[in-house]
Length: 235
Ligand SMILES: [Zn+2]
Image 1 (tube, rainbow, N blue to C red):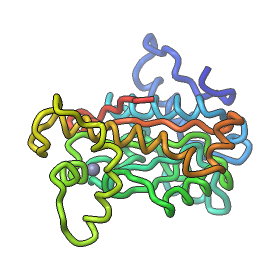
Image 2: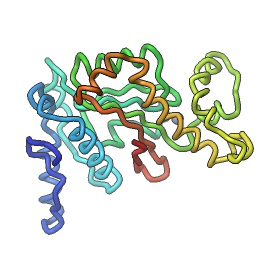
Image 3: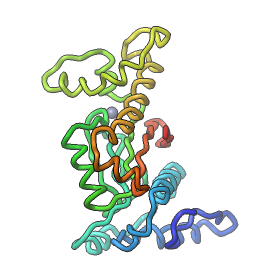
Image 4: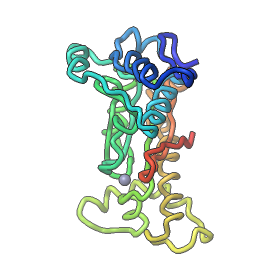
């Protein structure tokens, strides 16, 4: 099941492409209302994000009237998801998940780490504003991860990189030289960072823990591949 409101990821392979595109446009361009958000469960929100990335990577992103969406969300917002992503210019969550105005909250910071401000933002996005899923979205070849691997010391970046300590602690001698040119090692740290950051949220926020425990929220980790645009899910 995807949703109870007509979103359809169903097989339309027998129809002409234009009919498929029109179908997607009709269902995807309607903005989220409180009622529509209210009938969305966490698995629906994850399915929407997966379907959006499938559209993005297949070149069938939906072309909506964004100004109409601005008008339709002018007095309220009811997003279905909250994304924590990297500032990297190649990983804009709205585009890679094929989402639009009013669909998702986005917090972006180098290395998709979280601190008290971002966790507070996620508490707002979910407890107050009703989003059903939180996704920690990492990516390969991340400059912040490479800097953490190399233990860079530079201005405020030094303090930012302290957030990678748990991910760096997953490294073992078998991972080889701790150097940002060691691509498998950088990827391991990036994946560990996304996964451990997602896992830390319920420990660091009783509000998020309560939402998860009562089935109103799911927290997931995912990785974006900057060479393909494809997003793989770690949890
Ligand atoms: Zn990055």
